[in-house]
Image (cartoon, rainbow, N blue to C red; front, side, top):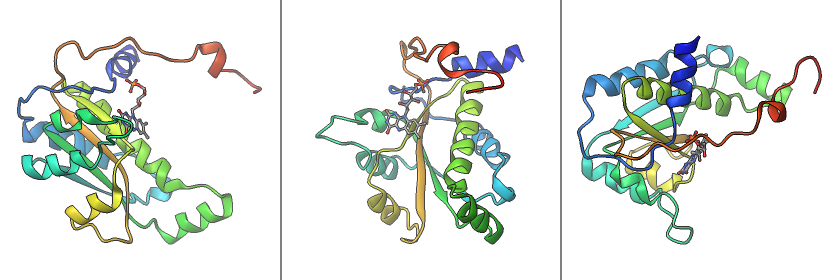
Length: 181
Ligand SMILES: Cc1cc2nc3c(=O)[nH]c(=O)nc-3n(C[C@H](O)[C@H](O)[C@H](O)COP(=O)(O)O)c2cc1C
């Protein structure tokens, strides 16, 4: 329990990386953690693309950067980008989602993404989930069929020194209760 909480506390969004290459075994470790993630009806509605080719990775990184907001400028410093493609869920999950008005796909992708980030932290690697990117351009670059969606991108690499920041979180009283709202 303590080990898990320490890992959860140690994981943070890393927005600066060294240029040290990430060992393929460590990338595979993170992707295996994602593959093992739970999903609604066990639909596993995902594909994980690890982008390690530096030119390709930089092209994708450029599509995450918003010059107006000066947002996501750091992504090119990460040696690896993981792209999570959402696949069509099983028909039973689709029916369940429609009946209950819930996007199970997005929930599933979020869980898999966090598995990746925690597995990376466990290996001494840093990550940052990236929800702001030019989806159409990234799909074209990676030959992802246009009807599919990209759920999230994740940067991956060895954190540069001084990356750690104190966690900013709401207080327990604000977010946790027992037996009533
Ligand atoms: C779905 C999602 C999308 C995110 N998109 C971005 C992003 O585009 N750029 C970024 O710098 N951080 C992004 N983040 C990281 C959050 O800003 C970060 O998780 C939050 O501030 C909490 O900080 P921590 O991860 O260091 O604990 C995203 C996180 C999530 C869960």
